[in-house]
Amino acid sequence: MNKAGERLYNGLVKENPTFVLMLGMCPTLAVTTSAMNGLGMGLTTMVVLSLSNLFISLLRRVIPDRVRIPAFIVVIASFVTVVQLLLEAYLPALNKSLGVYIPLIVVNCIILGRAESYAYSNPPIPSLFDGIGMGLGFSFALTCIGAFRELLGAGKLFGAALMPEGFEPIRIFGQAPGAFFVLAMLVAVQNAVRNRRKKAGKPYEKIGSGCSEDCMNCSDQGCTRRFYDAGAAEKKPVRQPGSTAQGKAPRPVQKQAESGIQRKAPRPVQKQAESGIQGKAPKPVQKPDRAVNGKKERLAQKQTEFEYIDLDKEEK
Amino acid sequence: MSQRMKVSSNPHIRSKATTNGIMLAVVVALMPATGFGIYNFGMRALAVILVTVASTVLTEFLFGLYKRKTTVSDLSAVVTGLLLALNLPVTIPLWMAALGGVFAILVVKMLFGGLGQNFMNPALAARCFLLISFPTAMTAFACDAYTGATPLAALKAGEQVNVLNMITGHTGGTIGETSVIALVAGACFLLAMGVIDLRIPGSYIVTFLLFTGIFGGRGFDPAYLSAQLAGGGLMLGAFFMATDYVTRPITVRGQYVFGIFLGLMTGIFRIFGPGAEGVSYAIILGNLLVPLIERVTKPTAFGYERGGKRA
Image (cartoon, rainbow over all chains, first blue to last red; front, side, top):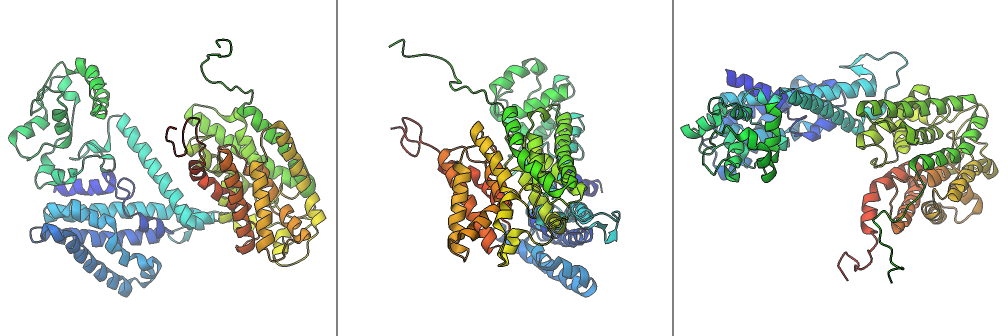
């Protein structure tokens, strides 16, 4: 079940849909006027997301490629209808306060995004956990935003008055501009932590079996397909450029390329090979003297600049 | 020939003006209005001013510590704090005034890169922030001598107002906006020093007058128009806020466009909007349009045709 845990971590922290992927901004900004609303919206989305992920994954060999988007929408819409009827029956207050945003879950881009990029090309169980992880991440983010907005805009938290008597609510936080302020601040804090970890050599990306960059800043089109191809994801190694310089055992990237598990090599390797730094060999060859030549090569190869800057940091 | 050509590297135009000096001039120019505000509203006005200025300067200082680059000495934080204080009612709780100062410097100015990078006038943005957050506290213009609606609100309600009192400043309103005489005196000082010119304030006020004359419902009645001119934050806004170097267009034609836009928006907000005031919203809306205005009013360089083609 390691895979499941990895998916949960991915959804909650590494690719948090709100703070990292910046998906589903409409409900994020609109319904988070209180912590309860945020939590309700998040959990509702989570239920729809995990169920739709599960079923789309089960149906992935049946759905033809061309009509996959309408097919996803039908699956998602069915679950949204089910959830909305349940909410109306058992939680009418929450249903009322979320209003039109419940039916709008159908077009929430997190759900469609996960269906397209994960569930459609992965087995059911990881897909289910991917949905749960993403949903938990979404709930966590919305609850955070809602808590701040409720605390500042109304002086309460989950409906309980928390602020001292003389506190006058800062009403702007209950309105639309406040949502932008709080979201921006939380993203800034999150980025600060991320950068600090990166500097300390413990980036989030290295935990689990992720690719080297976060998806928001990734320039590789179609990466998800390669990356999430069944079975390949687990064996996809974490890039460790530092190991070459120290002359350790051959890099895991090479191993994989040789064994042919993936039809195509993952992005960083490909780029390096294309740019011909390593003597145009199809497989990256280990060069002990690369640390010495590193600087020259970096100047010569502008396209791969960021990779080599990374490399330098690792060596320190 | 060689005597008439002087070869040198740029910059070719030098000036003794410094950020520091300009900011100091603005502070001096605001002194009459500040003094009159304190005289008119009592010592509590002084307390509001001190708290606001202290909070802006302290925020700038602390952010400077964090960035390891101090910018307090350019006095821009003092100007922001002073302008914000002059835009607050005297009865505002002091912690709200301080919060406004922190918002102005931290969110509007520093997070966007500090002086010169803010896309919006920090003092006005903070005023609007406070106005949305604390509508009751920000519109409570009651003080000892004058209670009730501001002259502008009374005017909108169709009542008669004393224009003479509005010009001298013996009336209700925010701390610094009431006295037209004090504000114009400060503006004349800035004009004489060459810190501001009349392009923006002039086009702003003329457009506003024409608009209110046409759409105000009372024609070009001099009493009505002068009350509209003297009331609210128009004078303060036109001379001290709209002319902010950072948030106004730099092109000459753009400055006229900017002034006309502000006049139109202020007129629309005052006459057709729900409130009696409109200057602050008009100016921050104008600030947002500045990049667009600059783009369409970019002057044609020598040797080029309009549109950037070489002649």
